[in-house]
Length: 298
Image 1: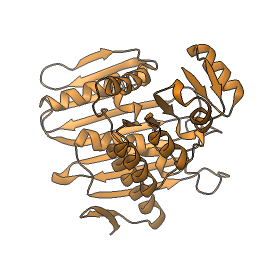
Image 2 (image 1 turned 135 degrees about the horizontal axis):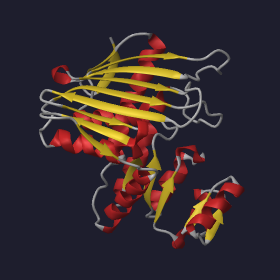
Image 3 (image 1 turned 60 degrees about the horizontal axis):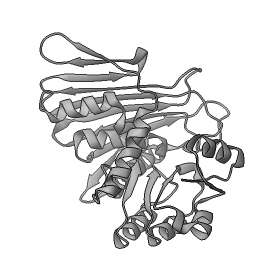
């Protein structure tokens, strides 16, 4: 196992925990000096890895799990997807929120038909302020956007969003985001994402109301509630970082089984496309509608 990080202290700490045999300052160095020592790479969005390095990794036959979103345009994303496709390597976009046990329960309950047709999705993600937050703009909401697209199994046809910043925040640093995603057949998602929580642990909750039932996932006291016919049921969980481990396991399994991962590059691109529509709505103060294969201001 190899660890690459420009922060030497963090790299050494991670290497010690993982038992890594090679430590370098980045993926480019790994490809140059240790290309034969690894088959796949897990890359954080904050790693500062250049577009060309991603493409070079794919050309070298390295499977990629990329925390989403990197600081790339849709055109850049298309280039990575094509490089991985043409060199027959797996590309998985990192959306660890899908692997949270309670969220998996909501998804499976929805797929079973118990909830009927998805109607209203509500997501809260509240976090304390972070000085090292690399996603301070609308793309910070991409995890929630991805969950909405995944649960509804379609793209929203209408996007409207607002953003607010606390006093003294740098330009473009939105500390509060609120999104409305309108889906075909009247379904909608209401999402808020804030980094203004006074302190303590981050908080996440998700509820899905369908035509015949509802499911609720809440980090509060590790209690997940399911509503449907009969009495409400509670699932008590203590997930920790299990969802991150589950994401990594899915990545490894897709390589071993020579299949597409659960979250493909195309899935990541769709979430990025909606996140860019969110940014356009915030910038212009107007709703954005999907017309054909693109989003346009109303």
